[in-house]
Amino acid sequence: MNKIILTLSLLIASYVCTAQQSFYDLKSTTIDGKEFNFSELKGKKVLIVNTASKCGYTPQYEDLEKLYKTYQNKNFIIIGFPANDFMKQEPGSNADIKDFCSKNYGVTFLMMEKISVKGDDMHPVYKWLTNKTLNNKLDSSVKWNFQKYMVDETGALIDVATPNEKPLGGKIEEWINKP
Image (cartoon, rainbow, N blue to C red; front, side):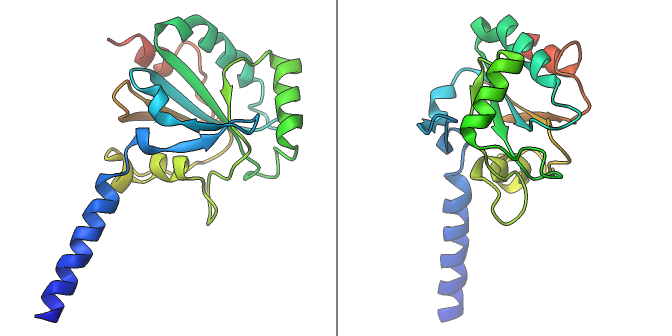
């Protein structure tokens, strides 16, 4: 009898933990240190990108900004998450990163504080993005800087674009323009 009760308790606890984890339950901190609730993103298509200032893909900031400027009035937002997980290509502080993005690429899309996108200290947003049990779509791993995750207006993970897939002229723009 005790084994049955224990098993049922574990199943219920597992269900509750999984069921309550939606995209809109997530939170992060902006690069300026303000709490940001993902519930504010309801009704928007969201592109989440892990970024780095000293990477071969860093020039993608320019195309990401163009993409954002083109579609920001069509319920679309980009969120950049600086991360130093790949060959230490994002060594700066949040202030350094913000300054770099502004001066070099005129970034106006939402930037979060520097986080980890892999390993034991992976940020909860990336746990959700990479774990099918949480996102109900797919398991993935962040391969490198500038990997892009697409989340639709209902908070559902739709797809992932590899770091070498350009923000403009490919599947990301097709997804944005899809009704």
